[in-house]
Image: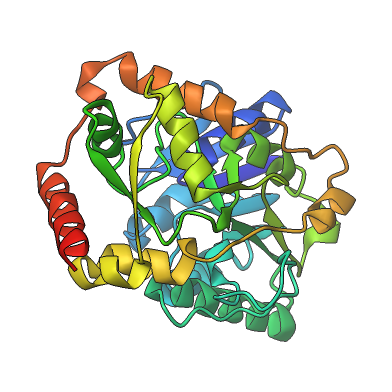
Length: 327
C-alpha cells in the first residue's frame, strides 16, 4: 500500500507513521521537515509546505496513492484545497476531525458516531464540523472516497494533559495550588497515541471505511481529579494542592482556556468504540494512563531544557486563584 501523510510527525500521527511502516506500507510524508520529533526511518520525505500550492503540485507530480491522510487540516478552505489536489490521485482520503465536534454538552453517554455534531462554545470544533460537512457533500455528489476520523484527547510522552504543561508540574512540586476546573468530578477519556494507531492504521485502504466516520479512543475514563492525582504521583508529589474553580470563572480571565473548557473539557465525555472494533477487530486500547503518566514524567525529567515554565501563565493562575478565594 502506498500512503501519503500530510504532516505525519505530530503527537498522534508519529505513532501512526511508525506502525504503518512496521506493517510494510510504502509511506510518504509531505512535511516541511521542521518537526522536533525524529523523521521515521523508512519513510519517504516530500519536503514542502502544503499551503504552497504550486510547490506541492510540482512535488506530487507523477504520484498517486492508495490513501492520503491530512493530519493538519482545520478549516473548510483547506479541505477545498485537498479536494482539488487529490480528486484523481488517491483511492481514499482520511480527514482528522475531532471528538470535540460532538454535541456539547452531550445529551446522553456514551457518545457514538451517530451523536449529533454541535459545539456552540468552541470555534475550533465548529470549523471541524464545517470540514466534515464539505467532505460529506463531496462524497454524496462525486463519490470522493473520504473517511472521517475523530480522535479525542490523544497524547504521547511529550504531552501533559492540562493547560500550562510543565508549569503545572512545577507548581505541584513546589506545593503551590493548581486549578482543576469545576469540581473535578467530570469524566474524561485519555488515549495513548500507540493505542490510537492500532485502530487508525486498520482503516488505511479499508474499502468498508469509505464514506464513513469513526472515533478511536480508550474505553477507560477518569475524573479530572484522578488525572491530576495520577500526574502528581508520577511527578513524585503525594498530595497535590488542588483548587476547584468553575470553568466560566476561569473563562473571564482567559477566554481561550475558557473556550476549551466550556466547549470540551468541563463535560463528561466517554465513547462507544464498537464501530471501530467491528472494522478493526484487533484494536484494543491497552495502555493505562498511569503508565502513560510515567512515560511523560520520564521524558520531562530526562532533560531540564524540556521543563519550560510559563511565568505569564504562572502569574495568571495566582491571579485567578486569588480572585476566586476572595470572591
